Amino acid sequence: MGEPVEPVTESWVIDGDSAAPVPAALRARVGRGALETWLTSSSGRSLAFVTNTERAMVMLLDGEGDPGEHAVDPGAEGSSDGFVLSNGQRDTYPDRDTVPVEEAFRLVEHLVRTGSWPADARWIADR
Image 1 (tube, rainbow, N blue to C red):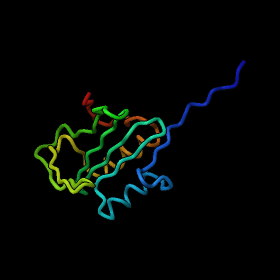
Image 2: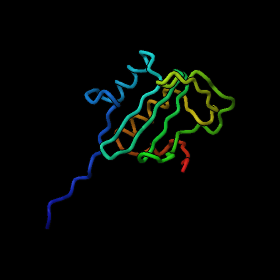
Image 3: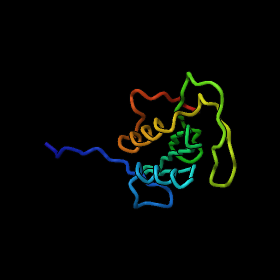
Image 4: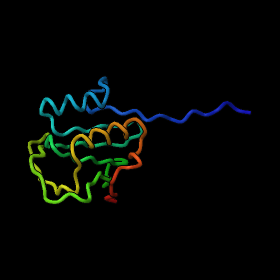
């Protein structure tokens, strides 16, 4: 019999800060007013986190050019503004396409730890 094969663990880093533990660093960045954060995995996937500090857009992309998938809040109504991108662009998103910021932190932590959405997460593919 061969030796058991260990599953490959995907590692994630915040673009520009490879040493910081992701969940804590993400919260710290938001606390400093950095409302857009991109994470990159060792397998080439990307994770975007854009917030207005109350709600957040969480998008997972399989690679360059992939339209990806994003977390949703299907029962939410209205829209929220104040999503400031690193290039200064200010966006408004329908609330159904964002989630409360604490839920967004939970989703990112789970994605980084396991590589997939939590079983109870609501998300849609944009592909």
